[in-house]
Amino acid sequence: MPLFTNTRPSPEELSVVNRSLEDQAPHKIVETAIKQYGPNVILACSFGAEDVVLADMMLRANPRSTLFYLETDFLFPETHSVRDQIIQHYQLQNEQIIQVKSKLSPAEQVTQFGEALWLRDPDQCCSLRKVEPLTRILAKYAAWITGIRRDQSPARANAGVVEWDAKFGLVKFNPLATWSWEQVWEYI
Image (cartoon, rainbow, N blue to C red; front, side):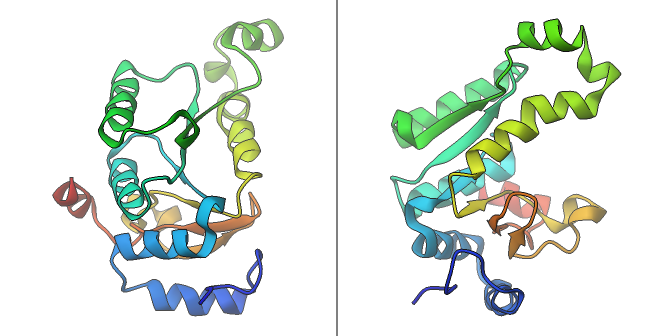
């Protein structure tokens, strides 16, 4: 039975579903997201600890699942190494791991905005290298899965397990919302 009657659930529907999932194990929340949205749900993966956990849960639930990562052109070599290990371990096909990049190469960014934009205007740099690409990829999906945990920051303390993401216009699942950093590492 579907969780929601349409792609934009009402606040009441979200509240009911959020309460019903609040005490569920994260892998059950991931499974619920996949059952509800099928190929129209995607995992945002930064290759940090939370996202590695979620990639495992998602790919166990459905080995054909899709994830994306933001290639800022400034990622650490270690990030690429974790990405490559995940691709190899889960035998991911190209269509399952989507690289999303800024429309501007670093050189084009320098030409348009000058050197070291991240130092002079970090918000503009973030918008170009992260926000715009994120907006572009999420526009293709009805729901996304994130590694948000309530204990990460005061701004995330009230994150729902499932909520409407008004900024991007889709449902957002936060399966690890109730977990601590220690629980993430216990899973790993």
